Amino acid sequence: MLAELALEPRPAGSAAEARARERCAARLRELGFEVSEQPFTYSALPGRWGTPAAGVTAGLVLAGAGVLGASDRAAAALALLAGAGAALALVGGWAARHGVLTLPALRARAVNLVAERGGPPIGVPRVWLVAHLDSKSQPVPIGLRAAGIAGTALAFLAAAGVATAQLLGLPAAGWWAPLSGVGVLAAVPVALTTVGARSAGAVDNASGVAAVLDAAARVPAGVALGVLLTSAEELGLAGARAWARTLPPSIALNCDGVDDDGALVAMYSGREPSAVLRALAAAAAGAAQPLRARRLVPGILTDGVALADAGWAVATLSRGTRATLRRIHTPRDDLTHLAGRGIEPAARVLAAAATALGGIHPPLTDEA
Image (cartoon, rainbow, N blue to C red; front, side):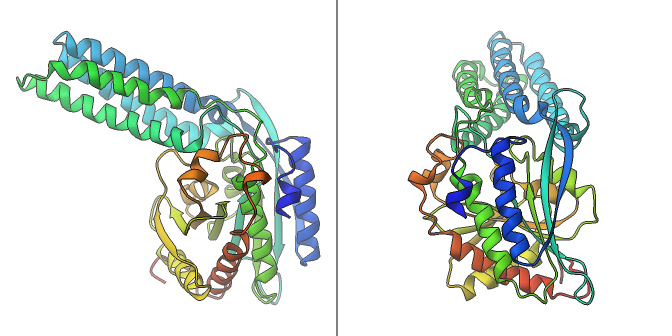
């Protein structure tokens, strides 16, 4: 399946993505799932231009604060940093959670693939396996983008500290030039993360889709199970956010990025999904696969973030190294650089965890 999915780039809403979706639908029907396509509309504005706009804004604010601070106008510098930081957080948070579905600009259409195996006497799915089908490229690899976001945030905090020190009468004016310079440099890769279609998305995320389909085949037929293959994950998590509005929160095991090397990682955002993490840890131990759990690195988004925002108990399973982060979202994320050795172990862990979680009654809580 990996070789079929990673033949070509799969931008959201494209014919290439539709061909990949058809292959997945055929495989899920073979496994006995009821399969449907669920179209949705969204705004591509946040996903295409939100991060570059934030990078440009942050760079300008840090440069402006540097000029003000160096001119002994520390109060004005601090006000600029606080106001711009709050605005970026509020506008960015609203655009990510709501604007991606409601903004009138750059409206687009895409399709989620939804498959369910359940019904009487099994019941409706309480556990969903999730992965995204679409791919994208960017001038900046995802690792450098994440480093830029973290560096910019630290520069904001450091600049606020320097301004505060000045207001307290400490001799801190000399820090502004190097600090604002570093902050502007950190913002450059953020500003350059425009969206293209030059990556076949082998790791991100043909590998995750292949692992989910393999896992679905391993979950016993007596376990009610759902499979969600989203579109437009690479454009603001639009597919997952649209789908999460259609049903009440439950449990999801997301898979995003399974490279050949590295340990398995279970990543999460928001409230820690302790029961889900325990299930993944037990499944990994049973499969003799090292696994560590951690919060998502700032600047890296997965469908799990959208589902967690909607109240789901969700973790994202991934596997890779620093070299993986240098390859994702570049033309080098192709089958030449991915053999697929990590897919089968990841699928075994996903299937065992889904089987365990699917058998929990009454409904799962983080204390279950």
